[in-house]
Image (cartoon, rainbow, N blue to C red; front, top):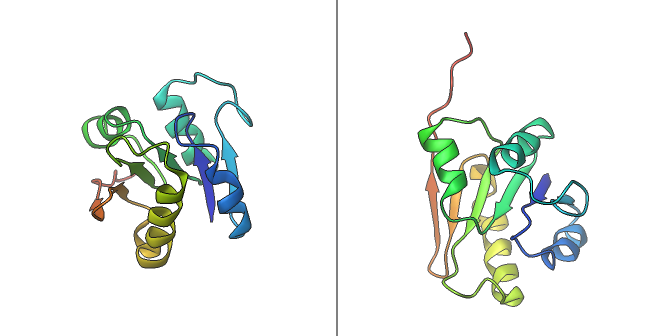
Length: 125
């Protein structure tokens, strides 16, 4: 499984994910910083990566309103707890264990649980 961490996703998750055996890249380290959200989403899709982000609105709009294709998004909404790396690791571990078969959707990860939003898939012409 491959992940792309948005600039705001917490680079401190990289060692945790790599220790679990995942391929991880980061915007601002492995790719240029300050890419537009649609460029980040396109990059993740091209490389078949699941995007991890704290960006509360832009990716949801791109996927659900504009119907951009993706390989999965994990949106962390931890209410001011984004800096709490222990909580982020715990929530991510739970998602990987309990929702691994749903990672190709848009998952909203909160302190209370995980909400899975299934995007309407585009049909190729």
